[in-house]
Length: 335
Ligand code: SF4
Picture 1: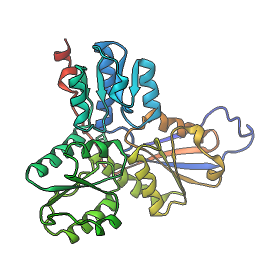
Picture 2: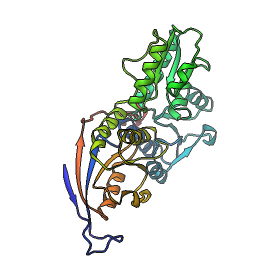
Picture 3: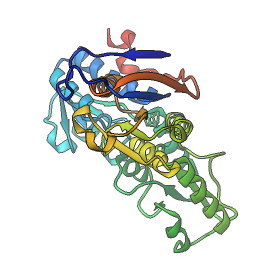
Picture 4: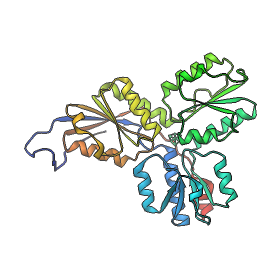
C-alpha cells in the first residue's frame, strides 16, 4: 500500500515553505492482537448485556486510550476486588490473567465474574499446572511485577514456582531436584532474550522440561519480526503504545538493538519530541498489541503537518487469529 498525505494546514510551518520529504515505513503486523480484541469485546458486550457499571479488575489491556474510552461507556476500573460492591454488576478479569485466589475470592462474595484472560495466557497457566501435577518445580521466565507474571505465579502453591528474570539469575538457582524441573514463559517477552535464557537453563539443567519453543505468543513474535525487517532501513522508529505495555517496550528495544539511532515509545502524537526527529528522512512506525490503529493514524497525520509524507507498508506475515468470546457473553447464551 502506498499513500501520499498532503495535509492542508500546518501551524508550525509557513505555508510557503516546502516541506521536507519523509518516507514512513509501516510495520505489519502491528497493533491489536486477537487477545486484545477479545478483551475489549468482552467489556463492550458485558456493558450491552448488564448495563453500566461493569467493573474491570486491572486495566483490561495496557493502553490508556482504550481504558479511557471504555470508562466513558460505563466501565469502572479497580485494582482489587474489595473495590467492587456486592451486587449483580459483573467484574471482568483482564487479558493478562489472574492468580487463582482472585476468582476464589469472587465466588466467596457471590460476585458475577467474566474472564477476559487471553487464551494464550490460559494455555501457559495450564502448562504450569500440568508440570506441577507431575511433580516438577516450575521456572517462569518473565518480568517481576507484570500482571501476567503475578497471575501465572498464582496458579501454583507458593514455593512450587520460581521467577527467572534474566540469565544472571540462573547461576544462583539451586533447586532441590535439578532433574525434575520445567520452564514456562511470559507471553510478551523479547524473542531473542528468551532464547538465550532458555539455552542457559538447558545448559545448567539438561533434564529440564518445557514447551517445544517457548510461550511467547504469535502477536509478540510477529510484531518483533516486522520491526527487525524495518529497523535497518530507517533513521528513527516510533512504537505506539503505553509504557506499562510489555510487548510495546520490547518492540522499542528490538529497534534499538538493531541500531536505529532514534527510538521512541509514545502514547499519542502530542508526546513526540519534534527536535529529535528534525533531520530524519525515513521513519519506521509500529504499534504494540494493545494500541489501536487510530493512534497510528494520528501519528502519521502529525508528521504530515511537518513533512511531505509517503507511507509504505512492510508486511512480514498476514495474521488471521481470532478467539471466541467467553461462553456466557455469546449471543445465544446472553438471550
Ligand atoms: S499479546 Fe499475545 S498473549 Fe497478550 S493478549 Fe495479545 S495474543 Fe494474547
